[in-house]
Length: 244
Image (cartoon, rainbow, N blue to C red):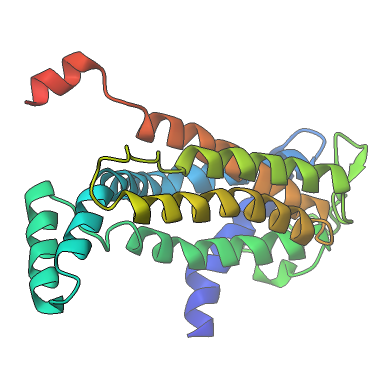
């Protein structure tokens, strides 16, 4: 299994990183990391787009789900049937928001390993024959910031980006008259806690990681914010009317 991961995920990503480093004027590893992140995000865009749309659809029917849970609290079999009927009626697959994320995990792990080894100028034995071995990688962006050591500024930037990404995903609290609104209030409270916990956790983890990994996290999160904006924005009235 480790050999499959190495050949299918790690090696292509590591080679792409070194290839970008080789062809960029001045061989700037920081710019190479930014370009690599953009390429990875573009490749995963359809999967993450599908996950975002599924999450949005689940959020939209959350009040109806909570109302069913309240109505059939003592009849689990009936509840399961009603929930399946709701999913079918609304054309929502509750698993479709999870599967794309699981598929992306091996890619992110391989990317993490590639950046770590690239910044340490190691692992060149994994290069393809057509990718030039740079011998040594200068771990600076714009020749100033050393990305091989922890960088608190990049760690904080990654945390701020994570905050705005999480803020965009918070479900709006339904009106009090909607059945199941109490459960929605609890969900809203949990979302607000995560809104602050995730950025703090990002800063805490990034604080000790090489700056190159913090740079990757910041760029990837910024791109995700752009994607979420387009995926979650309300449809124009004309588009909704046309669909109806």
